[in-house]
Image (cartoon, rainbow, N blue to C red; front, side):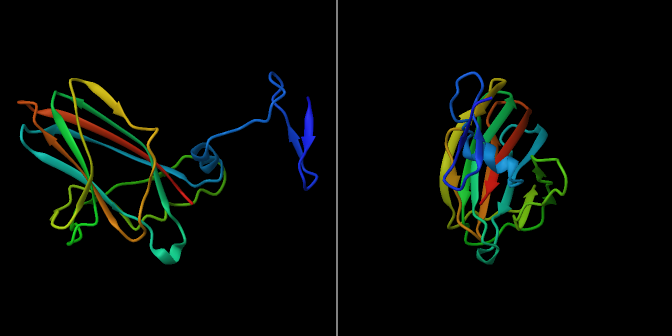
Length: 181
């Protein structure tokens, strides 16, 4: 198999088909470095007109970690579901149920996320929050926004809400992937 040496004398194995340098994306590299995480959930029976949510608080400044929110995927069994993504409400969300974040590298010692909190079903006061994104989706469709990366402020609450406007009860699923650098 063809090889090259870098400036430090380390051998680099070339791709055997193309004889080119193997290149992976930043988020793929983060998974290999054990810094790629995801969280997902299902809101099984959201009444028409009801709003459900999940929220997370990014790591402290002292942690030295910055969150790069990468993949957002949503699915609704029902039409006309709206999602909004908010940053930094004046009042922090309260209560709620903890969600588990999973490290995508499952080999050896598996570090936990440095997020301060990841919760669902929180009591919200969106006063002062900046709405960074609004999407409407549904009709049993998957909305995936993986090409847009957001680099998030440290020590900040972020909130994702879903409002069912389908005219009937709907099931709403979500999946987020981020890496910590």
